[in-house]
Image (cartoon, rainbow, N blue to C red; front, side, top):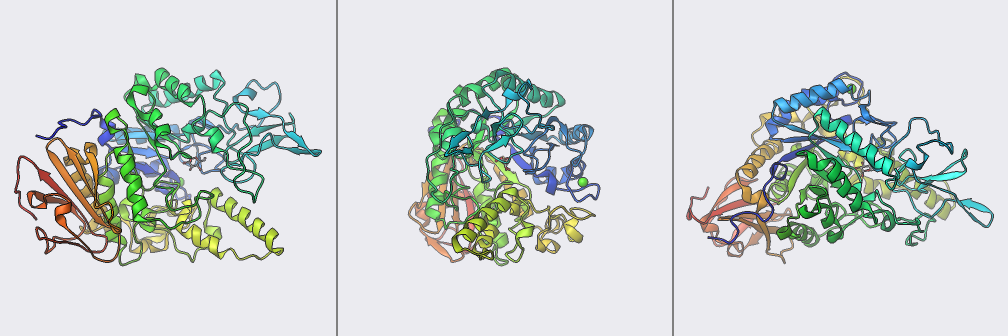
Length: 588
Ligand code: GLC
Ligand code: CA
């Protein structure tokens, strides 16, 4: 008998749950205005249930000026009319619950967008934001410090009325809330209770690690000498009081309900900093999204620029997080896509027509065989890919893309002393890395606009919808969708895939990613070829494959099973299961 009859971290429904992230604007439009909406999501609940989804997570649907696609919230307790009404939300919740699914809300508590920006001195809510006087340098007024907005330019905006600046770490319409003010925190707890009382089952908390800033708001270190404003995450990410505030959130709200909670924690690759949010004895959140893997293929200075990555790095990041503080109960999130990143098949698989489906299925094998709560992003289950290079800048709707493009263009214009500078290299990068690729409308069928809307879609649908869509894949037993559905079922049947320990095999292999997972008396062996060329490996180095059966594979059975060499075809992935007490089970 092996040593661990039970996982060190106790089982919980939200650990084995399959979460599906919906980007409402691009999911399904029920009324022909070109924008996805709540009734549209309602109409697709059976689709989600059929896939095997347990929890539906909605990106923000609250009233918003849409400066950052709804992550700029102007009414925490109401639905933006574009998406519907509170009643539609109630119906959606009911529809999900009737099907045995839960509903989790994306919320952003780090900033708030007041409708009337009445910033006068004696506004009682003035101290809900972060105000500072500017500084005078050589007779010129400058913002209070050199912090750069994540979306470029200064992180401060000047208010003529009161002659002070307010802080916005993202767009101007997202003034940061002053969490040091206890009234702000109370208001946030109230908002949470409002949605919990309405029946919501949990929260995805946007950039929750930036709610406490370093005392005195000191200048950021100058790293980028090409501009005045500097990235300041060292002064606002995981700040001095953040854990105090989240512990308070837990005590006041979260501890009273059986919720699923996940924090978005960007700017942080240091695992020990993230542990504090997650370790159960700290009583903060169930889990967080760490972005080390997602940041692998870009340089530090911009997530929109592509950097080459190696499988060695990819394996190393995954291995470290899979093993991280497992004995202390650290719990991972497993995800490779969301609304802030390009499509995974285009980044980590191979989105050519030849390899697209098979590599999307291999990435699915990766996802369903890792420990942590599994998150699928809309369209990932279809193997949706980035839109093509032939699309121009006007198709990139995201403020992050537009602002970065403008910044670089102006820099080049200055440097080259002329207007018409060559920007094609940046568009090459955007084609690989922009967030826009995740935000194209869902491809439901082969009708115009992929069946997403009967009107004009707010964003262009990817060109391949006529033959790459949900309707076609639902009918094809070999489709990426069918594979995901089956793979989810396999994960559900084998707790070892959710809770087991992780050990890397063949660490030196340049093209093959292999590992084992062990829980109690069951052991799973996972092997994947991250390349188009065949890869040959010695099966003995993976374990005793003769005592295993195959439980998941993206190619049909192959000739060499049980042989002395294992030949993996391009992007082939396999999962074997060994049962100590039922040895010698047949191969298939
Ligand atoms: C979060 C959201 C992202 C948004 C950003 C700023 O990171 O996931 O979509 O742009 O916050 O609002
Ligand atoms: Ca609509």
